[in-house]
Length: 514
Image (tube, rainbow, N blue to C red):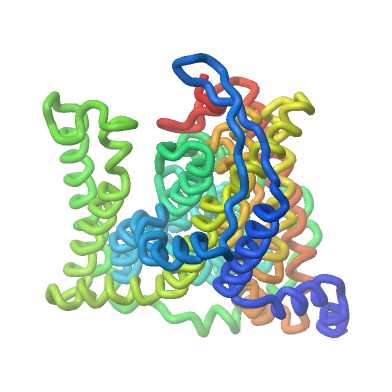
């Protein structure tokens, strides 16, 4: 009955409708076609707007007109720049380089082992906040957090006489609803920074969003959200679930495979930890020693900020290699190359998506439609005289709702960034603040959108303990986390903006920076 009700619910209908949408790459191709048609109509219609330019002669007005992409010049530009658009797409190289190191650390077994070991010996009273924090930090591990943590959490809660469904919910909330927060830079940061840069360059051809732009705000978020999730779990989720699934836990947990060589894993972890300390010490010397390669200021930011992606590569690659060698997962250079190759193979769908997204964004820029919409929309927002915190909060809500229809974070922001980043720049909001607001909205509704590809994994795990659990069970369990995280994260973002604190190294709140 529960399953039947779930199948007929509005969430199930939303899921079916969302599954009928084309692939994100197809959506970007269709968006490119739409830009080509609309730009040509705008050129034929003589649409023009006026922007204010500040130069050596003071403030002057400059007309911006649409450029069509269906006439001879427009089509020639598009065909001549297809390869260049793709190769120079800002997120492409950043993401692929960072994922080489992160992927090897995950596939060698280092990151999954860290997740499992980190939960050992935690006092019962602190299990929930620690599990939430570990879930939030697991965004370092690609998909490992979704796969490793929920089953582990279910077994842990059952061993404490608590519903395994509560453990699953807590782990899922940390991994998914807190996905954007972290104490360190993750693979998400270069991806979003690249898309923000592409959007900002519609107005400012030289603008660069640093990979570290949201770091301080995300550190604060990673420390606050476990406390919020702890409150939500104790006040709403666990009282509602009670001991559901506990009677099934014994049989399910008996099926769990145990590690056969925990001693070897421990040696590998200690060796990887030593390698990480050595790498961090070396990086500290390179940053702090006068005249060292990472000391001082680069072209736009501090040198270590500009080199953060290669630094990420080394920080994950070296401990991952050491762990893999000691644990036996890597026995030769061919094994290491194979593990990195598998990571790049898994990035194939992203590369295809990036190709079509790059063509759409660059065509949007060439047509001037992005700049013109930004000027018109920015003037409208500036005329409303709303404070930046209010505009950022409204954008959070827009993204949270959009996440119900477009599950991919990269695909969604590739649509939003070319429109909202330059539009908010016109209203005085920095691309870095727009990006931070996007991260909040994109995270909080991850646990309730049927388009989350990991929803099936979580639901099937719930059904191991409660066979009649359906999509409605999952969504009803996770909704309190969405509302709780959304409320407190909005409060944190508003407070941050009102306080005037930078969002991170090279992370201003206003445009131009105050």
